[in-house]
Length: 261
Image (cartoon, rainbow, N blue to C red; front, side, top):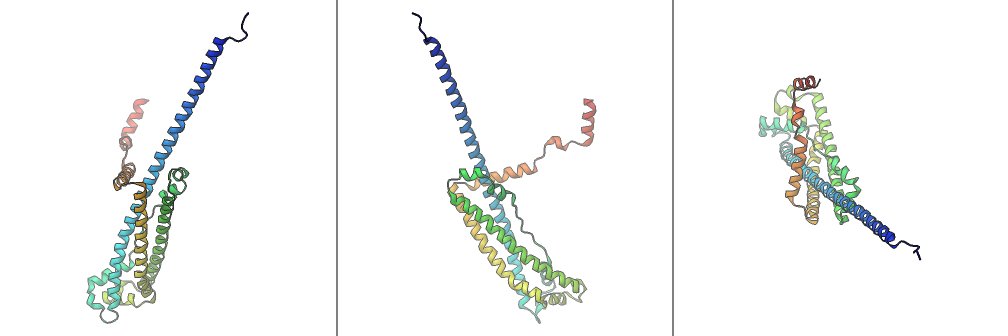
């Protein structure tokens, strides 16, 4: 009697089906693994760039703090000699004082990296420690506050110096001592000199906090300074390297186009 089921056919069909299913599982499983690995690597690169950016921001702020400290020393010295002993500073120092009060300084801030980190959901998923995310966010928040406070003081100082200049430019005074004295006699200038050391100290304290938070993140994530330096070198290389083809002169490009025609 002929069998209703062909056992060989079922064996072959079952084997092919199982093989196909295993192949699909392996394909999707491998793709899923590679995708997760790629996301993890990209997340780590983003964290490296973020911490490197914070390092650069704190270094820029330290440079500014050093300049502000020098100005504090100069401003305090000039104010302490008012009104009758200002000449003891000497003409050169008084010129430096006037120029320092009227000079504009910039606190460079880059919001690109902080924006990338804040909007990168993959980074947040790959970071196991929520405190790291919080510390990075706090670093950027503190730096933003520092930037705002410094710009407020900068605006007051430049406004006071502009008003002083509008009344009589320093070079129009009989001598530099009278020019410096006229500057120091202004109430708006004296107010700036009063708040300048306080703002400088506040910036220094917050700068120390950012440095501590950033160093803590490096320790928790086991990121070495060498890795951050390499990330910085990569950024510099990508920023400044120019393809040799881009350096061709218009004449060379024209000759190439003529040859193709």
